Length: 363
Length: 91
Ligand code: SF4
Image (cartoon, rainbow over all chains, first blue to last red; front, side, top):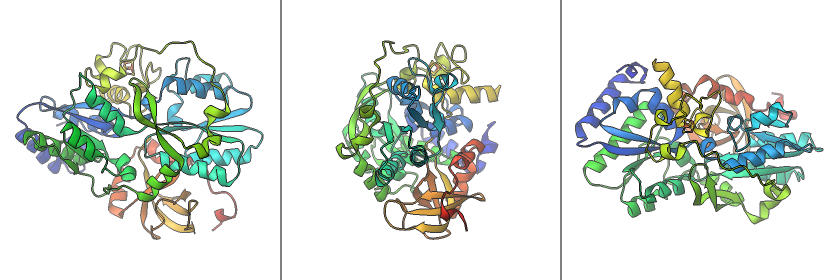
């Protein structure tokens, strides 16, 4: 009960925990999809409180962690060009590619600017007409409206020196791929609340029907997570498979229509290679043909790297629930947040970094 | 990086079209925010801002709740946003 005093309402949390234990007749396996949820589950001690009752697998929900190595390599190559300034969210800088990270190349003089918003990168392009500004567009559907708007802004400003390296990923196809894996252990999903504020959750209907499993759209606070877990367990115990929305105070069934339209206007669905997963059909977004003049992959040619994949990082095993981060042989030894071997150790939303951080805090 | 930061809409600069913009206050700090996805937000209402663009409206209680769960570094994220430029910065 060490962490219960951190709950917003400890009494309510305790009631929920008791209720989860009461209704659970066997150890169900749930996956929380979003890295923010993983962080919260560990931070508030929920995962350990529920040990033996409900197993939580930490899903692929950190965009930084699933951005493919060749994309990071290409970003590094671009940043090293004399004529280019690479603009990126700060989270991406320490993510290792196959030949180092953006931070590594920055220390040897590459041109990298961290920005809060892709629109700040557009501004950078306006202010530096002699440079090519490339924005490294990573993220789930929550980030896609901002990058879509950046493209429209660059178009409106008739900028010739702005482009994007688009590595956007879509959550639902990855969930589907996990379910299709022969070794799948997931019996219910806590869907990522914030992605749903943009995209809504109607599209999960097909997942629920096709795979007959509960999907509960869930928020990030301890009580949200406990409610989401309870809703999943109740369904599983009753043999039900329904779509529920625990996060109704923020998430509407259709999401934010304007944001979806904006994304649709600029992007189309494509297959995308995810780090640790390989190619996920429909797992990404790419620029529509009418916007491809802003595509950094067309404007610049990547130099093919002969270096093989890192291979040592066990992130796939973690995302499929076959090991927990501390069981990775590199965890805390060769792989720490200061010197990460794999992406899940980099971002605070990565499962390995969350374990590392909270394991330390507990000791 | 997916978490948004809630802020209060204090002044509309442009309310129509893809480049709708408003001045939004985050715990005393004001920033220019793109509002294309929440053009119906009223002054004094709260919006959740992600990477410089507001992606949803929230009530004040939820805004306070979200703000409280953010870490200091997440709150500071928004400070990294470029401050206003051009004539709209005055006032
Ligand atoms: S501890 Fe490091 S090497 Fe092991 S899975 Fe996590 S990120 Fe990969």
